[in-house]
Structure formats: structure tokens, C-alpha cells
Image (cartoon, rainbow, N blue to C red; front, side, top):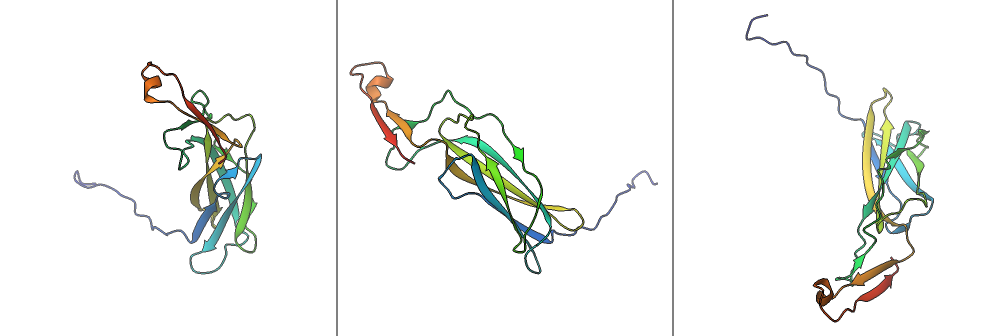
Length: 171
């Protein structure tokens, strides 16, 4: 080769042939032990991607609870924290409608600060094994209610009077 020449490889790019959608549980669901999410696939130039292999994955993360109408209140326990918990599911095959349901298992041993952000991911594999993926997130609630505290400015600065307001809010 010439000193100024370089060898390169050119590969043909083929765009994905499948459109994938991940649908989390309904927003503001209770974080029960089993939260169902759906992965669907459809061919770009046809119908449902029926029969193709698919897999799901999910992750729970801490999320703030800040309901409208309760501005000035702080909700949650800052001493609690969810540990990293990315989990993959077993593979399944898409049904005749190009869909498969998966379960995100929420353990009662998890101790989130307040609300929980559930991120679900779906991956569908084309005939040759190439994956196409999608993600979606929603907020779920681990607790039946949240306790909020509003500290007056005087309490924050250590002066009198020492009175605070406490509320219990159902999500």
C-alpha cells in the first residue's frame, strides 16, 4: 500500500425491518409483586411480527413524589435508596398479534425513598437474529400513602416557634 493510502471495509447497512414498542403498566399503578408489561413488534412493511423471539428487561429506580397541590411539602425518606436492579426476563415468542407479556417482579424487600420509576425494555429478534429494541418508563407506587412534612422558614433556621405541618397523601 502507498504511504498515504488506507484500507477500509465497507459494509452494507440494512435498516431494522421491525418496529418494537414497550408498554409499561398503567401510570400510578401500585407496585405489587407482579407488574405486567407488554412488548410488541410489527414488520415495517406488513403486519404483526408473530412468532419472533422476544425478551424483556426492567429496572426500578427511586423517583420523587411531588403531587400537585402539596407544594412546600417534602415526601419520602432520604435515608432509603433502591439498589441497582436491572433484571432480564426469559425469552418468549410473540403471539399472533405480535405481542408478548412479561412480568416485572417488585420485591417487598425493596425500600424506595418515595415513588418508583419503572423502566421496561423490549427486544424482538429478526429472523437472522438481529435485535430491535424499545424502552418506556412509568411511575409506580410502593406505598399506599406518603407522609409529607412542611417545615416553616423559622424551623429551618433554628428559631421559634417550632411547628411543622404533616400530611398523609394517597397517590
